[in-house]
Image (cartoon, rainbow, N blue to C red):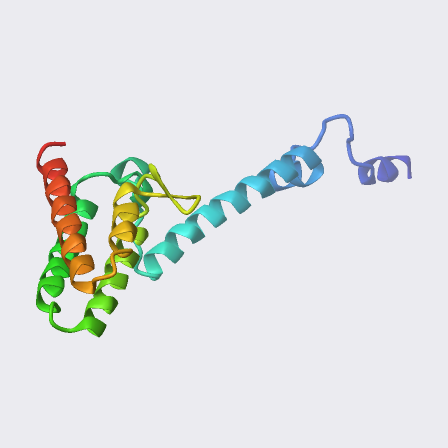
Length: 168
């Protein structure tokens, strides 16, 4: 019996070699880091697939300019185009007082919307110099004089814009 009992007892003097799965499962730090890495890679690949599926394009940070940082000719060209349009309308409304008043308010709203540098003051509030000039022009009792002054201001503003666009 002694020999039979010895045969059933396994030799425990040599350690059994663990496979990779068992090593990862038994070591908590390795398990945690492997899970974290797997999740990161899966999330990164999922992001690429979502961008691709939605028809978007990834753009590198150095390949674009934020609109707030854009000072070049694009926005200035659009402003000059709108000023041309306002000058054209202002020249056509000279015989109609109600249309002239609407045009004057439209000009004022456009100039205010440009968010120009606040280098003047109107009734204690900071405004741009051109907006301040237009507001002073609107104080004239004659609507025709208001129209003419505003047209002159717009034409001067357009000339200044074109000079800045062509000679940065």
